[in-house]
Image 1 (cartoon, helix red, strand yellow):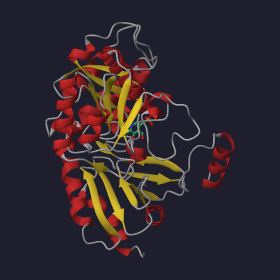
Image 2 (image 1 turned 45 degrees about the horizontal axis):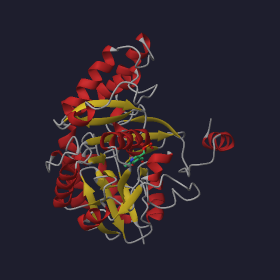
Image 3 (image 1 turned 180 degrees about the vertical axis):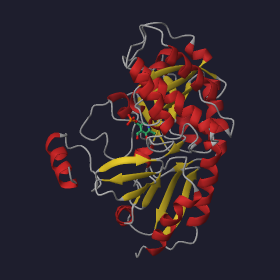
Length: 387
Ligand SMILES: Cc1ncc(COP(=O)(O)O)c(C=O)c1O
């Protein structure tokens, strides 16, 4: 089928909830995807931060096809060797305080899980969340989301949320009360335009939650597994939350979410209190395991930091670039022009990037397998962009 045929059919039958780029992707290999005309694109958007180790990584392809031949699915009512290995592998790369994993299928489900656990653990209701946050589209995670128009038209949402300015400890302190169960935040607010706080903010937040006995939740749906130059955001600065939620890139492209939970909390959770039919299914578990091995064996956590720094350095003297934010390969480029215009120009040059909630901020969420050499076309194109 050609592009027009695919577009027409998809538009006719798929619910019209997505604004799509004008291309049909046919295949992917590493940091590149190819459209129906065999045009090659450098994918600096990574299929929405999912293609963490590149598209169709052979190790993931092999792991899921071998697993599919043996067993495509069985739920958590039985034990599975592949799930056992995946559980051990993710706990081994997680901060040492995290001793248990709960598998689910998406970022929003991971956040729902974390917030349920925070409520149950503390016996309290209110969750403090951040202004400009994005945590997902299901009712609980949407209730924790304050960014843009996502909430509009779905009220009343769950009311027991209080929103404070990201990076501002005083606002957290004022929002705390006897009914606070926990605090949820993206350690780097990605959709908001890749905003990061001072190191001290995370440290003080950790101390406050510890002192109060409330649950600190890091939504690492975008930041986990090396993207920011460490396996998890807090690794480098020594700030470990009580619960980490992850999804997107952790399954090498296969849908999987994982909630990592510390020992104090996990030992309070009893059988039957939570579940998810597909959580930790064999295909997802095989993909997760292969993904972790690829990241570790190829030192991709270090690569993310190295190539991220290279991007920061090379964007400095480009006229359309005003400022660069982020860490590792989660990068927000503040532009002197409209981000949609620049994104569309780059698509024409064979480069896919993302936008954000900020009109002038372009986002890069590429595979962490990205090499310096891949990026020449990106810098050249940005230099040639006429404002
Ligand atoms: C930080 C963050 N949390 C949660 C989600 C929701 O993830 P999902 O779309 O897998 O439900 C996203 C998705 O973009 C996200 O960026």
